[in-house]
Length: 103
Image (cartoon, helix red, strand yellow):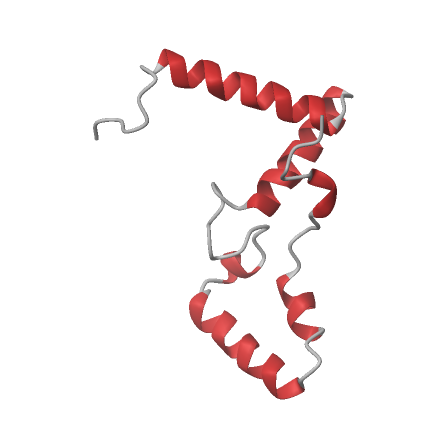
């Protein structure tokens, strides 16, 4: 079964490389400046997720983690996704099956 968020459709995050490939040099300079302003810490510039969603919600990072897990377990990516969904479903039920948890 193929999920709508197919792991084969996502590539790794390569911020600096994507900026360099801008067809318009002036546009690339503007994007680079904005990138440095929004990510002032050097560690954030080499992170494997973008600044829009962060590490816990980045679909590209999640896809990378699924691929790594599948390779470590010697299973298919689809099976790795199913195991992860089963695990999260169990965790959700054990926590009370409430979408909104008290703070």
